[in-house]
Image (cartoon, rainbow, N blue to C red; front, side, top):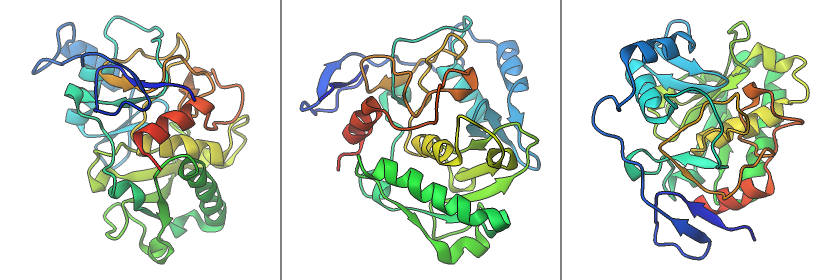
Length: 274
């Protein structure tokens, strides 16, 4: 079995843990080296969803409001250009606190699929079921389709953890999700109508496997010099993994569909044991 490590966080678990170090702590306020100009330039490249204050950073990271976007920028975005980072599957852990679901909550991740998809709803349901099973097969997580709420599947819908709805962004993104620390109003998995076209080598199932990775707390595997380098994350695997389901596909580095790699399976099984 491949070893798993948290760079910067010791959890008191030794069966798979191969290394622990110190967490990079962010100072209060804007970190050294950042500026309002740098943030505004970053913000200008994000897509703001209509009639909301949600910003989507390419290809699919959503942040609810300026404060959340600024926190992401100041904490995670490299301030000295672009480059690679010698890590693989990772979760956010600002100030050493993992962004993940609790043991009970992660086994009851209920969702609805909006009937606004029309004739495409059946395809979304099937793709979501397949994507969920990929994660459920290797980790202690459980996604539950609450079909009784599909007719009222909106961001404020109670009885589900998140909603899955269609959008038409004009191709700003294929799909986008959220992280475990998002408020209910921001816990939406949105699928653009372009995701139903020719997106080869990707598939709708692959996109949803990737988006569910974000739902579980995973950030992008860099994998390319075209991807922003990040800080403030806890890495779960020891080597870069270009085959990771969490590869940043906007960098043009994926050779096939987005599927869980062997390293992904080991890492998510460590974070959420069966």
